[in-house]
Structure formats: structure tokens, C-alpha cells
Figure 1: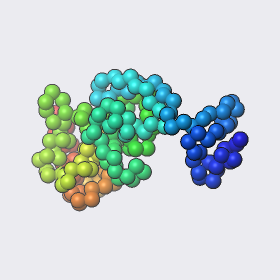
Figure 2 (figure 1 turned 45 degrees about the vertical axis):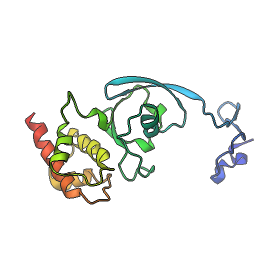
Figure 3 (figure 1 turned 45 degrees about the horizontal axis):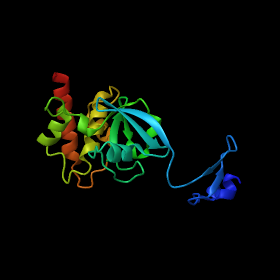
Figure 4 (figure 1 turned 60 degrees about the vertical axis):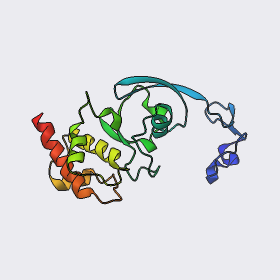
Amino acid sequence: MTLVQCGRARGRAPEQGEHMEDPTNAATATLTGEAQGYPVTLKVNGTAHRLTVPANAILLDTLRDQLHLTGTKKGCDHGQCGACTLIVNGVTVNACLSVTVMHDGDEITTVEGLARDGQLHPVQQAFWDHDAYQCGYCTAGQMMSAVGILQDKRVPADEAAVREAMSGNICRCGAYKNIVAAIQDARGKLRGA
């Protein structure tokens, strides 16, 4: 049976228990609903976690469901809202678009990992000081994107550049002015540190 015969070429996923030929080695796999587990090590907020995850596990779900780090929010599941933004190896990533097994050995920072020694990260403090949140749902993703752009030397310091760099994060409450002010304030504090 080929993938076309199985229905995948027509956009239909195989049904539970349906057989599908593996085109790489002609081995037949049965989809049973219980995904085979793959070992991964994720270094999250400075702590290594050895996990077994399904091949199709999404990083966002792994962080929330297996590591119980619920600060990273599930918004759109399409990489369009930024609520799930975190930092992987120094680069911002939409966790809803990342497969966990791709991050074996990676350094991951979530919003829970920003504060150090009981002190808020300068971005967290600036968001508080500038009331850069409304309902709070997008705030973790906004802060992680802000940390990412402040670490990226290619992003100019002017307001227009900050707005453009933050354009992947949606705030339905409309706190954009305060978010930009918080980022600019945090930039000043980080330079002075």
C-alpha cells in the first residue's frame, strides 16, 4: 500500500489501526493511537530533563504537559499569535510549531526561567512598571520575544524597529504602546547593568 492508497496524498490522515507502508524501508507500521516514544534531553531553564516523547510531540505540549511549565501559552497553534514564544539556543521560537525531538540537547528558556535569585528579569520588571499587560494571556510570549530582540544586536533601538521585531506577537487587548515602552526601558536597564 502506498501513501496515496492510504489517503495521505488527498489530505486524509490514516485511521487508527490502518496500515501504511514506510517508503524508506518498506516496513509496515500500524497506527495504534499509542505513539512510539523517543528519548530526548531538553535543558530547560538550566535544568536537564530526560524525557520519552512521541515522534510527533509538539514542544509547547511537552513543556506544559510533561514538565508542567504552563507560563508558555497555547494560542493559535499556527505560529501566528506569539503566545507560545520561547528562546531556544538564543533564538526566539514559536513552540507550537516545533517538534520536541528536534530539540534534543537544546537550551530552552521559558518565561519561568527569566527571573534569577528572586529578582525579576529587567524585561519582567519593565512590563510591570509600564503596565504592559492587560488580560495577561499574551504577556509571557511578549516578554520572551522582548528578551530575544534585546539580545539580538541586529535589531535597532528605535521604536519602529522594536514594533517590527515584535510584530509576531498579538495583544488582543491593545497594550502595544506600553509593551514598546517597557522594552525600551528594559533596554536601558540592561545596558546599565
